[in-house]
Each structure stands twice: as C-alpha cells, then as structure tokens.
Image (cartoon, rainbow, N blue to C red):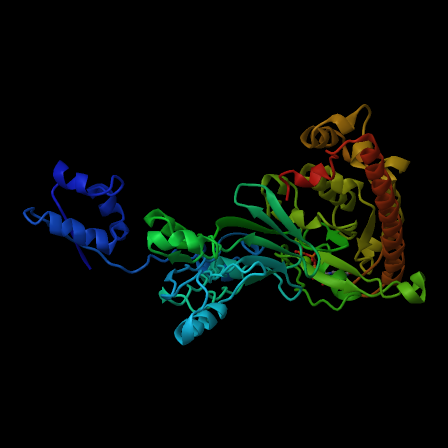
Length: 531
Ligand SMILES: Nc1nc2c(ncn2[C@@H]2O[C@H](COP(=O)(O)OP(=O)(O)OP(=O)(O)O)[C@@H](O)[C@H]2O)c(=O)[nH]1
Ligand SMILES: [Mg+2]
C-alpha cells in the first residue's frame, strides 16, 4: 500500500484536521481514513507528493517467553504470567428512514389502511413507542478456575486474548420489522488453575480463584450502538412521539457507533491450593513421603532439587471423623527443597514459598541420617521465618525420615528430644494462629508491614513447638501409619480452629456493624505484596 504525503507546507497541514500531521502519518500511516485522504488529494493537486510504501499487515506481539526456555525451565514460568485481554467492541446501529406514510392521520381508503397495517407491524414497547434495533454487545472476557488446569505455562505462549465484536445492525435504509439487533458476541472464558490470583498489572488484586467455579469478568465488551431515524425536519415533531431516536443533526451519528471493549493487562499468580505443605532441605524425602501416602507419582531421586515445581496429592478421608465426614480429604503439596539463603535467592530462590500460603499446616521433613539434622531443621525454619513469619505460627509436625538407616536409628531419641524443645510452648494466642496477638501492645493498630517486621525480629525459638515429632522411614514404610495419625489429628485441630475463627469473625463483624464501623480491616495481611 502506498501513501502520498505532501511537503510540510502550512497550506496542506491546515486542510487536515489538527491531529493528522505529516509526522503522525509517518508514525501511524493507517490512521488516515480513505475518505479524508481523497478529499485532501483533490484539494492539493498542485503539490508534490512523497510516496511512502507501508505494509498494511497487523504487527503481532511476540510470545512473552522463548518456548525452549519453557521446556527447559518450566519451574521459572509455571506460576506467574502477564496476559492482555481485550473485550469486543459493540456493533454499530444504523441510520434508518421511516417508510413514506402518514403518521398521525386516520386511514382513509384502501391504500392508507394497508399503510396502517405496515405501521402496526413495527416492534413497539408497551407504551407504543418504536423499538429500534441495536448493535450487538461486544464479547466479554471472563477468567475462571478450572480443576483440570495445573499451571500457567500455556499463557507464556499465548498471552493475548481478544473477544469478538458485536454484530452491526444488518441494514441501512428503511425501517421494517425485519431488521434485527446485531448479534451479541460470545464471552471468552479463560480457564486457569485453582488458586490463581488475578491482579491488574502493577495494580490491585481483582480476584482469588480458589474454589472450582470461581470466576471474574476482567474485561467488559462494548455496548452496541443505537439506531436513529433520519427524518425531514417537518416530520420530526410528529415522529418524536413515536421514538426518541430521531436524528437531529449529523453529530448524532456518533450514537450509532458501538462502544469500544475494555482492554487490560493482567498478572496471573498461582498459589497452589493445599491443606498440608511439605517442607525440608533437598533430598530429605518429601516427594517419597507424598508418593507413600497419596496416589501422586512425583519424581524421586537422590540428587538435590529433583522437585522443581510443587506436586499435589490427595490424602484419603479421615476414619476418625465418622461416617458422614469420612470423605473429608486433605491435599498435600510437596515443594522444592529449601536451602540456606533461599530467601536471598539461593537454590531455587524463595518464590515457590508462596505456595504454602493457603496451607493449614506443615510437615517438616528432616533427613535423620544427615550430618546435622537439628541444624537442617533450624535452617528450614529460619528460611520460612525470613519469607513469611506467619508460616511459623501454623501447626506443624516434624518427620525424622530415613530411620531405616543405622546412623538415623541410633540417634533418634536424641533428635526427637532436641527438636521437640525448639520453640516456645503453645500459648492460647498462638494456638489460635492469630497474627495480631504476637508481641504486646496495640498491634492491631499497626500496618501489616510493621507487624511482619516485628514478627521477623523474633527468633525461631519464639514460635510454637511442633505438635509432634515422628521418626519414620517413608521409603520402607516404617512409622508411616503413626505419622498419618498425627497428621490427621493436626488437621482435625486446624478445622476446629477454623470453625471457631469463622464464628469469631462473624461475631466481630456483627459487633462492628452495631458500632457503625464500615471499614473493617479484614485479612489485610493477605493484601501485602507476598502473593
Ligand atoms: N534410606 C532411605 N532413603 C530414603 C527415604 N526416603 C527417601 N529416601 C531417598 O532419598 C532420596 C531423595 O528423596 P526425594 O523424595 O526425592 O527427596 P526430596 O526431599 O523430594 O528432594 P528434592 O525434591 O530435591 O527437594 C531418594 O533417593 C529417596 O529414595 C527413607 O525413608 N529411607
Ligand atoms: Mg522432591
């Protein structure tokens, strides 16, 4: 396609509307509409033109990540992505004429009767006014939680989603009852894994899609344009009684155009949904434990960082809960190994620790045959504390693994005693897992950042001791049943606590409403940056 541009003479630039200068044409040659271009070229016949060849193809955005990197290092990309969604524009309405007929006069004779019937066949509202067709609504964009999705990797390859535009009113000319509204474009529904947090890019959190079926409308399609009736001035008055959509002057035509659809850039952040998190140094046996007590089949090997992305497994129902509640299962998340300095980016860094966020309890897996298991245990706790001290308040169990090996078996009693004594005795506040009650004073008046900083100042000894320390060999299936018993007891405790907390929150909300406080700060900590 060739565009002709005049030399930069004031005469010609004046003939163009102010925003279309030669420079803007160079930057965006397609912004010059064909009609304007025609007018312009007629009115400036004497001018010399510069011919510019430009391609009319659309520039496609490159995929955000190189696909080989996705295959080689999926763990870097599986839980975070930026996408752009664009809802469809609304379809256009139309400028229509009324068929030539006498509107207000009574029918006289055969011909007029036929015309009256025609008039009666238009679509009308209950008050008798004419219903004019509208352009179709542009397609919306919805993001929803889908259990069958596991990661956000696919969004690195396709990161732009556009809904279709609504259909135009499919007619120009005379209004008849046959003219229909333009078709509404279908909604685009984008499935994401359970636990995906949808944020505006560098903006606020829009939704946390933690339950199956959760969804959010992220971009609204444009509304369709309306249709207008074009009338000679003498007839306008009489027609205004039939419809408000009578075109008064040319500027009304803007109402015929459909509204543009919304376009937004979104950040999707995955936080896996699991009740129990498995943490520990690399090679401690976390994946082996997951494979031993659930049907999951994670990779297991005797080299560090075998697990690079969280593996999930389902624990069967708890037989202690009775017939009705037996099916209450728990989901376990096996995380990559943590090493000293992970919070500073060592090993796999710290980002995967966000996947512990939704867990109710943790299992610390410690290799009891390692050189210094107590130190290993402390290292992991320290890293958790540095990432999010709230993790240390959650109920947890320590599994001293690999007791089939003699070096572990011999020192098991000593290790149990040592590890059980690290931490403070459970206080009622800590047992309730209440972040606000840590420390003294009016912490509830402090900002979340201050609270976290205060919590970080405390050492791991200031946080609760484990609920149980169990020696086992998950590989040889020694002591696994005892471990399961403890895990289920802890889960029951967590659920009881959750119920009590829910009741307390409801009571507090009622109290706040009584006091007339609208702005109740709920889970402000969740809003902090550590998604
Ligand atoms: N002897 C013995 N070996 C075990 C036991 N549990 C796990 N192992 C071995 O320890 C090695 C590491 O096990 P994994 O389950 O991959 O360890 P991990 O904690 O998931 O390691 P990362 O994924 O690297 O963090 C494997 O060779 C397992 O066979 C056990 O109870 N006894
Ligand atoms: Mg593993």
